[in-house]
Image (cartoon, rainbow, N blue to C red; front, side, top):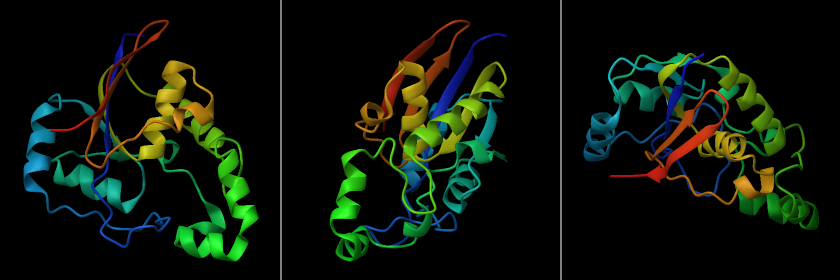
Length: 188
C-alpha cells in the first residue's frame, strides 16, 4: 500500500453554550467565512473526504465544499450519561467521583461511555480502512488526539496534552512502515 496523507480538520466551533459536553446533534457555527476560505485553499484537490457522523463535522465538511462519507470510527469520545450536560453541573453532582475521572482521563470511562483509550482503538480500526493518497478527515479534537497517539505511539494520557483548535489543520502521513507528523493544530 502507498502512503496516505491525512489532512485532519477539527470541525468549526459548536454553535451552543460553552462548558457543555455536546451531543452529536450539536450544530456548527459556520459564520467565519475567512477561516473557511483559508482552510479550503490549503486542502488538496480530489482527496477522499470522510467525516464523523456528528452534525458539526458534516456541516463543516459541507461548508468546505467537501462531499464527505460518514465513518463512525472517527466520532468523538462517547461521554455516555454526561453527554449534553455542563461540566460544572456534573462536578457539583458527583464531586470527588467526577474529579477522580479526570485523574486518569485516558483510561477511565464515564458512566455509559467510553474511555479515550477506547476511542484510540476505534480510530486505529478506521485508519486501517483508509486508502493511499490524500484523505481529508473532518473530525473532532479527541479524534485528532487519538490519531496523534497512534502515529507517535503515545499513552492516552500523553496524547490528551495536545490542544486542537476549531477549524485547525493537522497533517500526518502514514508511510509504509512508519508515521510522519507534518504539522499539528495549524491555523491561518
